[in-house]
Length: 413
Image (tube, rainbow, N blue to C red; front, top):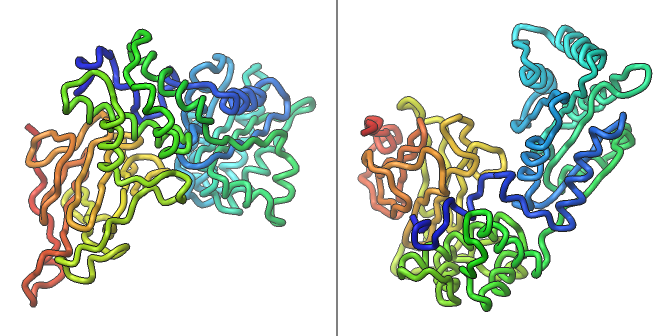
């Protein structure tokens, strides 16, 4: 990697939410203060919203890292649950094994636990990330939990964090009672241009730059232009810039490196729209079905030799990871929050490791980037991803099973 060249001791632009890299803009500082207020107030119920990549999860991790020891926390990240499954998940976070319990027993156990913790002088906090995926029925259960109280205060503090759709749900007539219980609401916006530059320098400083200017002065405005100040997009672009400079064996990122990174990512200016990917022009040497927006390939996700999911690939980027904010979620402890991405163009498809813990492997060899060919199998944690190139002519008469059967699982070195 490029750490030695840039004299850094760790990767500065990882996508994983690391509290030590948190940059407290005015917006982020205010959102963090709102989270902390759930502990200060006896009726703490806070809702934090923000666009994808705005830094909500990093704020949560920082808040938990700094939380006092007399607090008991249930942190929920998987939110596509039934009401009973959600309540069971909360109990699991508190150390119970409730899966044989029916809903009345789950509620009784949870109520008793909250009262016992209050008597012991401990504060109990429920944090739900990606809360926009909660159904109305589950949100109604959250409302009921928020109503559990002792003689003087609520027994449960609650933080809901999610994308802007969460506000739409809370504003619906069906959830007016829940909305009335929310003490504070805050929408986390993107960084300003000045904050974006300070954010880049902050992360480099934490990673060990010691004040050295690694990005040329004329790159900052362009980085903001293509990321809109969204922290996750800034991380992706800056990491790609560092790789471009590393490829030239230069320890400073220039405007030329930035241009190369933008071309590699196929990005358009942020103000051009929410679609982060430039749709490649139609290649008239290819069959007509591979034109703009059309499927040019697909992937099969397998576990223990069995296909568990299939996904079409169109020109653009598909991010794969453990958390629900990914385009393709793999719920496994062997998968990083944002593990890898597949970048599809009209004439190529590339898989790239996003600085994951366990990496990606092709033919038992760990790779950072790899151009996929028809039939390639990539090992991702304990799962396999098989790439099918839809532009490759296939023999007629083959069954779907014969055509897509996965080869034997690659062995580790």
